[in-house]
Image (tube, rainbow, N blue to C red; front, side):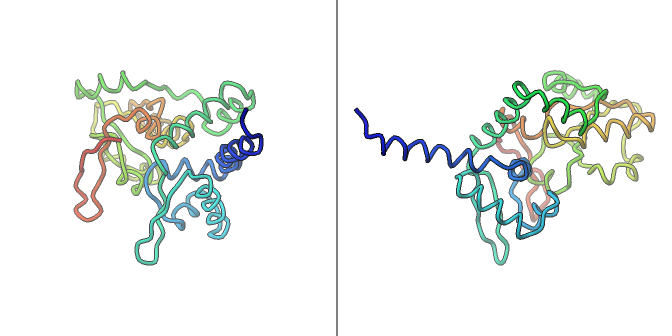
Length: 230
C-alpha cells in the first residue's frame, strides 16, 4: 500500500498546473503566447496589464511549468513550454463551453454573432481552387511568428485604410487567434459593410497549431516566409 504522504505530494504537483490556470488574465496571456514568442512588455500592452502585474502572472505560469523564458540582451522572451500546453489551454476552453452555461453568453456578448463562418476543410478546398484570399487580421508580430501558409497580413486596426489592397471579385476569409478571438468577426463585419464578400474561419491560429498543420513564419532579419511544422 502506498504512502499517503507521498500520494499527497504527487497530487499537489498536479495541482500546480491548476493553480497556474486559475486566473482569467493568465489564460489570456497563454492565449497570446500561443501565437508565438513574446516579450513581457508586448504581453502587458496587448493584455492591458501593467508591467509588474504581467510579470507576476508570467512567473505564476512559469512555476506551473506552462511557459519558459529566454533572455536576449535586456529583453526576456516567453514561449509555451510545449505544444501540449496549447492543447491543454484548448481543452480548458472546450470544457468551459460544454459545461458552464455562462460561457456561451459571455462569448456572444464579446464576439457578437451572425458572421458567417467556414471550417478548415472548406477553407482548404477554396485555397486549392484559388477561389479565396486568406486574410490574417492579427497584429503583425503574431503573423510573423507563425501564420497559415499563403495568408496575407492586414492587421484589423489597418484594415479600414488598406481596403484598396484587396482584390476585386474574390471572396475573403479572415482569421485571427482562435475560436474566441473577436478580430475575425470585426473584420468580416467591416468588409461586408464595404461591399466585400467575406466570411471567417471558424477556428484560428491556436487550433491550427494544435492540429499540427503547416505553419509559415517570417524570419526576423530577412522577412522571408519559411515553412515549418506547427
